[in-house]
Amino acid sequence: MGIAFCNDLNMNAEIVLPGSGVRVAWVKRGEALVVSKSRPGFDAASVDSILGLLRSVSDNSFPNLKFLVFDFNHGGAEASCAVDGFEDMAAANAGLIVDTPVITIAWVRSLLNGLDFDYAMSCSAIVAEAGARFSLSGEPFDLFGLYAAVGRRIGFVRTERLIERDAALSAAEAHDLMIVKDVVAPQPNFEGISAYLAQAGRRYNAAHAIFRAQRIAQPPIDRRPVDG
Image 1 (cartoon, rainbow, N blue to C red):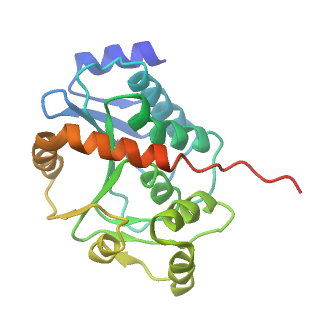
Image 2 (cartoon, rainbow, N blue to C red; image 1 turned 45 degrees about the vertical axis):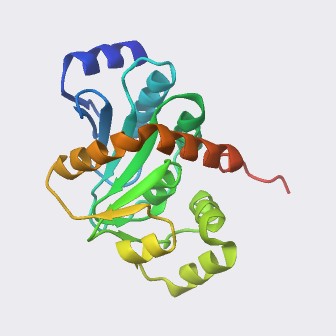
């Protein structure tokens, strides 16, 4: 799948992976890929497609790639319910910054919750449009990874209080808590992403070094069940 996937992507500015609801597009003159999903959460098909892309990136199939952006724009739909392969996909995404020159960014446009929020936390940085919101609601068993990732970032006591509060954070609140790196004005399609990456590209080397050091200091979340 990886080789055919790479060939298709090199020939086209944008492709839709059949059956998965995953769309992949080039921006910034081939230095960035934007991955979009048509529905919240992840199913087997979307996990397989995204994991295939991550493996292709890890294998240096895109030598000029600097940024891999995951574009979340699903409205207020619930995105929980664990699916097989999600743990491997999140770990592969988290590891890219250590093993490759690629910075991963979660771009959030609306409500982010459940597994989408969990996956976003495995990226090097989260960028939110001003109207975005962040929710920790959902089934605790399905969201262990999210709670652990947010707890690492802001402290587990504060995370517990946010869960008990059961209210979504605004983009500004998430920024104040250092969950979100930057808050930007909403723009249609990929215009905001392209503008942001144009600025980020100027400090790419320093940003990559910082994000890589952060990931080495805090390796991916271990989601394996504990034997009783």
